[in-house]
Length: 331
Image 1 (tube, helix red, strand yellow):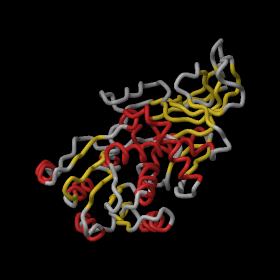
Image 2 (tube, rainbow, N blue to C red; image 1 turned 135 degrees about the horizontal axis):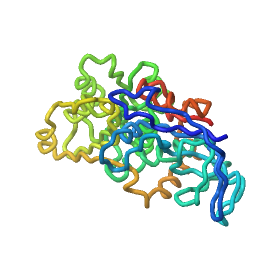
Image 3 (cartoon, one colour; image 1 turned 90 degrees about the horizontal axis):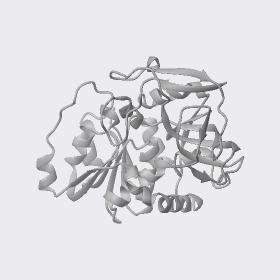
Image 4 (cartoon, rainbow, N blue to C red; image 1 turned 180 degrees about the horizontal axis):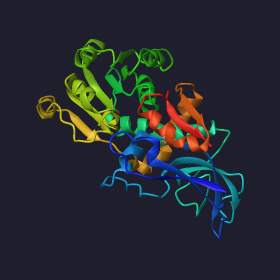
């Protein structure tokens, strides 16, 4: 039999296990031109929460009672496609299924000897590409500038900070525990860290950690931390809006500080960033990340949960900050 996971309900506020359901069907067989894929690693990411709403976005919403999809690393178990052989490893946007049939379109072959297979969902996958291209396309970092990163101990944030150090910048990270601050400063070489949960005034804490102001802010959380960061931005600062996990589960549209005066007063650029808009740049990004990884200039951390049926819980754990680095499920 073949297990798969569907979206049972559209969550209201914070998702729960009741919003997912694991089902079974017969194991599929490939037709002419197809390949049979066996899932090995499944990526869970905060942005999936947005696809659980029935509303227009940059990517279609999930349909009820149909399989959820995310990035998956899989092995080709059987092939009737000339471009793939049994035993090949691939990554791509695939369903939450133990086995599935594909025509091969949209899949990328990966070489196991380059790095651990799970890395192709993290530092050598969309996670690393997001960090790299966000800084390249919007951040445009210059040596000597100050880079501020929220969600700094997370999958994207930890890579962003390390790239900032490679570029010769001062890097300050914001995270939600003293343990995570220790992690980013000791393991990922951030210059300083701010525990926002312990901060009485996050704006003042940013000011202390960034006495010369902030030139580039890589935002993974939105909300009050975004407001505080903008208030500390320098002239011609750049804000990369990559995520807003602090408000993903809000049932009503949150309100906050009006940022417009601060944006035009300091000629600040603030731009939403969706990595799929830069698909033509993926391969150069992967090559650069691979080179830095081989040179030991980049480190990465994963939280690996074992068991196909644990995928929903691993996703929910993202909103509790239980992951260190990239959250991956080993099927």
